[in-house]
Length: 359
Image 1: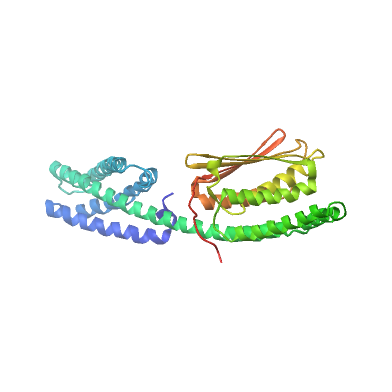
Image 2 (image 1 turned 90 degrees about the vertical axis):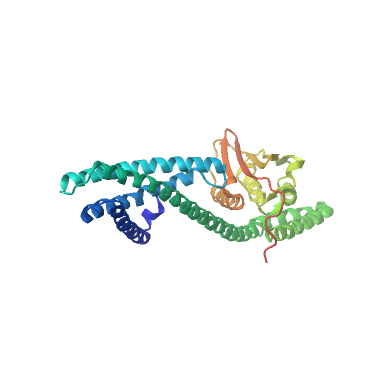
């Protein structure tokens, strides 16, 4: 629906403006020929009111042919074509209304007057529609700028929330308990391994804090954080946790939102590998195809296992951040197939940082 029709505060002034335009048109038609005042006003005022709503069709034409993605010649030809059609419909309808007025009243209006009025309205309707199209393009540009600003703010808020969730997840008592328990079990049998795991845990938490303070990171940095997380988890799960990586070199420099993959890998382990006695393999793939970056995180699932709480919320949070980061070009798809759960990320392949650190 046109925004004017949903915002009544604008509708009154809009109708009033076209009423005034109708009065001006009535006086103009009287100057062109000896039309009775009552006939001129009864014809011109309703005609201009109808015109005010006919030109609103430019809203849909402008949305169908946006300036940013449509060649200028195509925009011009399409808008002129719609202008001719809209003006023809309006002028024909107005002429029929004038014929009704002639039959209902006693005004003397000749055929020449009717044809002249038809021509005036047809020629007037074209620039009025084109002016409406210009105004609608300006409105759409303003809305696009407002939407972009909203997405930036949403991304900032969502990223802050992701920082809190990420830190809370890493400092989750269960995560720390499991990690410390694994370290404790190594102290007696493998002191060197326990020391390495302590260093790995500390390094992982430091890198999490560092990445969370930035607007975007290279995929290579995000994967490095995931590697440290997996190294800790592999101490816990041992041979039950396998990892396969297929990452194109051309994809490593692409920018992604910070802490994008680690929650997905954590979900893959928590909701896939940990619930299986035999464990499983987490597969991570990244491929760049032209201007698009595709990332896949896949894990095995038991077909009979019920869905576990928390996975959907995590995916929705990642989806919102991904959409805010890449606007309409980015998306997240989750697919469950027999024995496999797969998350597919698609986003623009950008190699320049979208912003600096956040203080």
